[in-house]
Image 1 (tube, rainbow, N blue to C red):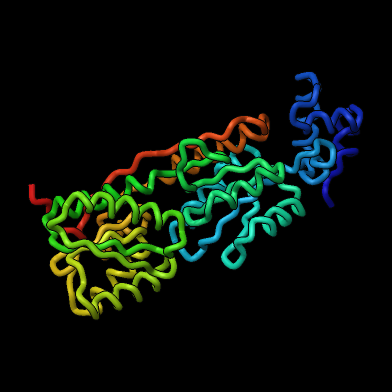
Image 2 (spheres, one colour):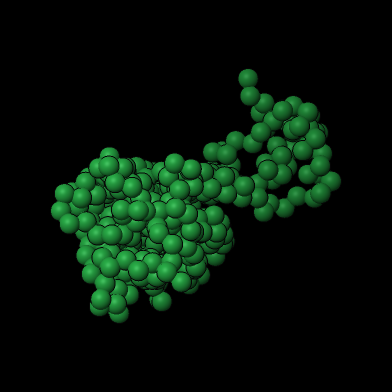
Length: 333
């Protein structure tokens, strides 16, 4: 049977309230008392009950981690970093899958039912209004991988997707391709819109290079493969900026199955630098997104909001960089 708080108090020779204060963050207790209680707890193998503690403090330490793209392998890394990072701060992650539910009001109700202390929305596709619904409901929220803005309505941590689009376009131009294309994810996704906008605006300065675009129906391997197979039946471009690594890998699969080679016949550049893109049989040239820093900064902001819920929203935007591998031909210079 589990050791009780009463047994720890008897072992330490103190009151039950003293034991309770010892294991309550911020409660007043002397160092001598803390050591005495901790020794008794260690001797008995006692662990404080987090749920019981929440009734005393009014804080559950639960942080809802909300995402809508569980099909993309990059989020395995994201979830791993988030759960470890939250736990290291004494917080408890609650993973919520919104793959088939994107109504913010429904999500707010769910988070209230679980009495979360805060919410991290981890998505590059959900619009800013989704996260704002939590803020409007009085729930501390951080939007990780969200859309950058000069005056954000909630805390946003991520990258400048417009600049990433420009960066990919410059890479393709530097390799003397005469026909390049953007192959994006879902057209309604904010990340797709921004990456497309940046790519097309940069290519507008290179009128001699033919530019085209298309969209896959999801950020997934199958969607990338389907869209590239469709493009290969028409007049494919010489090189593609696939707006995500997993789309790129799907596109590479279609290219290989069509008896073409990359980069000799068709070049590919992705975005994210997920672990799979580094595998020898993929070797994807891509744009590195600093996921570890984004997750760490998001957790830092969330922890700060728990102590200061009224702090003004800020946008933390991290720079990206091109990772040269083997799916684009060499630069002309």
